Image (cartoon, rainbow, N blue to C red; front, top):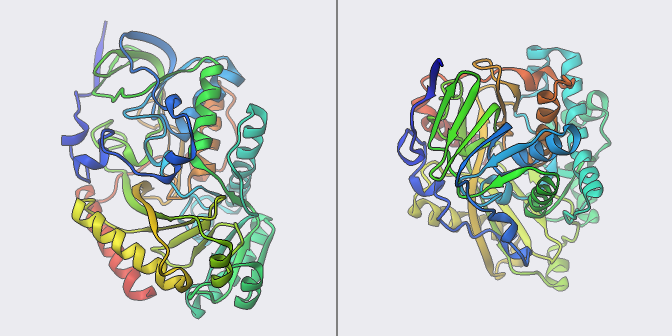
Length: 459
C-alpha cells in the first residue's frame, strides 16, 4: 500500500511555536473566572485515547468549533466523529474568552470585503454572522442547556470624540447593507441607558448579539455531542500525522485515530508544524481578562453603570467589558507578544490601572481573577471555513479574529453540512484558502509594530 507521510512526528513545544511552552501546556492553570461558575467540571475530562480506533471524521480541537461539528455530524447526519483535545475540553479560547456572542469575526473593512468578494457575497457575510449569533440561542434551546444570556446587542463606544464619525459610517453599513437593527447614541443617551466611563463620547448599538457564559456553552455542546454518539478524548495531543492511502492516521501518546476525513479546529492553539497547508498562515494573539469581585448596587450606581449589554471601544487595540450576572466587572484587552511570567505581571498591572482609570468609582474594588489566552488572526483578516486546498479530505474552521463565540459554533454546523455533502451556501469570504504571511518567522515582529502604531495613533 502506498504510504504518504503528510507531517513528520511533531512536538508542539519545540517546533517553531510563537510563544513559550507554558502558553500551550495544558498542565498550566488558566485561572479563568468561568471555571468557578460550574459546580461540576468532570465533563471536561473524558478519558484520553488509549487504543487504535477508526471513524468517519476526526476532529482536532475540543472547543466550540470542534464540539459543534461533532454534535451536528452525529445529530443531523448520523456521522460519528472522534474529537481529540490536548488538554481539558474547552481548555483553549473557548473556555477563556469574554463571552461576547456577537458579529465581527472579520477585521476587513466593508470596502475591502466588497473589493475582495463583491457586494452580494459581502451582504451574505453579514447575513451569515447574524445567523451565527441567533443560532447559538436556538441550539441551546433545542438541546436543553443554558448559556446565561445577557443584554441586547453590543455597544461600540467612541473612546475619543473623533471616532464618532467612524461610528456614523458603521451605522450606515449595519443598517443599509447588513440589515441589522442599530442605533447611534450620544454620550448623554448612553449614560441614561446605564453606562458611564471616562471614555464615553457616544456609541453605536449593534442590535445583534448578547453576552453569555462561554464555558456553559462549551459544556452544553460537549454533553450534547456525547449523548448523540460523538467520542471525545481529553489529554490527547496530536504527536504525529501520516496519511496512508485514503486514511489519515493521527497518533497521540496513548493511541491512534484512523479517519477518512479530518477537521482542524484548534484556532490559535494550532501547532505550527501541524500541516504544510497551515504553516505560517495563522497569527495567534494574546488577549487578557480580569474580573472583579461582585459590585454592590451602590457601587454600580456611583459609577452610573448597570446595563448588562457587552461593550467594546473604537481602539484597534481595543478594550472590551461587561457586567456579569453576579455583578462582577469583566474587563479585557489585547496586548503582549511574549507571554512570559514577567510580561503577564506587567499586563495584569496595566489592565488593572486602565480599568480604574476608566471607572474611577471602582478604584478600590478588588480584582479576583486574571488570565489570558490566544485569539487567532489570518493574513486575509477573516475566518476560514471549509475544505483545505492541499487535501480534499482536510477541512478547517479557524481564525475568528477575537470575535469567534458565535462564528465558531456556526462553523461547526457548516463543516458538518460540508462533510455530509450538502454544500451549504455561505459567503465566499469564508471559503477563501489560507495563505502564509510574508516571511512568517517575523509574525510577532509585525504584531509588535502594529501594536506600537495603534498606541501612538489612538491613545
